[in-house]
Image (cartoon, rainbow, N blue to C red; front, top):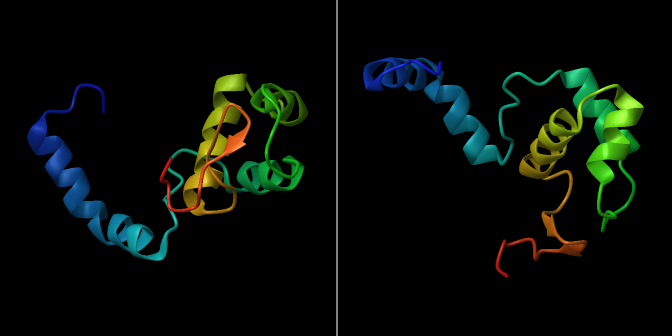
Length: 98
């Protein structure tokens, strides 16, 4: 995908539009490239929010992932609505307003 041009991206989006649109309408983001069983495990292992700093490293250790991979799983769960967005240990309002 890194070497795709505009036409390649248009074709990809056109082919996946229903999935992308349905995810936006239902509030569930597609989990491209993420293992659903690991996503479910991450959801179960994460403690109640707000999370302490470095929670992605703890999750990575428990699931055998890199910290970067664990962060992607956490972000996917937030996008799906399973958890709230937070910055520096502070939960953001559900509407995303600061």
